[in-house]
Amino acid sequence: MDRSLSPLRPGEIVLAGTPIGNLGDTTPRLEHALQTADIVAAEDTRRLHHLVNALGLKLTGDVVSYHEHNEAERAAELLAAASSGKSVVIVSDAGMPTVSDPGFRAVHAAMKAGISVTTIPGPSAVLTALAVSGLPTDRFTFEGFIPRKAGERAERLSELATERRTMVFFEAPHRLETLLSAMQDAFGDERRVSVCRELTKLHEEVIRGSLAEVHDWAASNEVRGEIVVVLGGAPPEQKAQALDLVESVNSLIESGLRLKEAVQAVAQRERVPQRELYAAVVESRKK
Image (cartoon, rainbow, N blue to C red; front, side):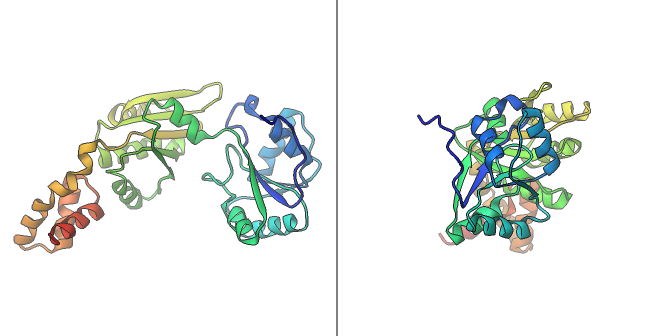
């Protein structure tokens, strides 16, 4: 196994993972890269300087901001710098760049331009929360932040109602109770969930239970800190539920409702995704 701290290669873009809470998780490769890169692109330059000062490091390259509001413009600048032979390191505030954080535009553009992209692996809130959740880890999906608007949030969760894989979400602490309530509406009270708070930090906390139980906890506590929600997948029988409801839709159609109206009524009543139920009805008519 290679333990060397070889110099950064000229003309390469490096996605570097940073600690999600505990500075002790900083890797020697990250320290070496930050100190030797020609350019360090940071989601928040203040947090980057706080990190390097806490670690006792000294930056020798240029530091530039790289966040969601300037990502398109700055990505082009980073590619131009790499094309000229400079080494570029991209870091987010915590965890891996591109995972619900800036970086994807630069990677996509670099691939098209034939510029080398590599990583310095580091901590990940997604995998850390999944590991301690107590929920199945063999298959999972990362859903990031759910829309804030009630209608869009309900639609997104409805689409996930029959998802069999474990699901990982990010959420702000002041919106956690609202999210858990919406999840109860979409998935029922008994679906298993884990809320992971302040992972790797001094006040780390993992709350596990049913959606109803964890929602009650969130409602009765002033939740603070970084939050990751891990939700269990749908039970096997739920996947076939849409097929079982085809006859209910057909009965409503026979009573005078249009197909779309009948599907919507049954989907809302039974809490199943309209899209899946509609597809099931259409498929049944082909037989």
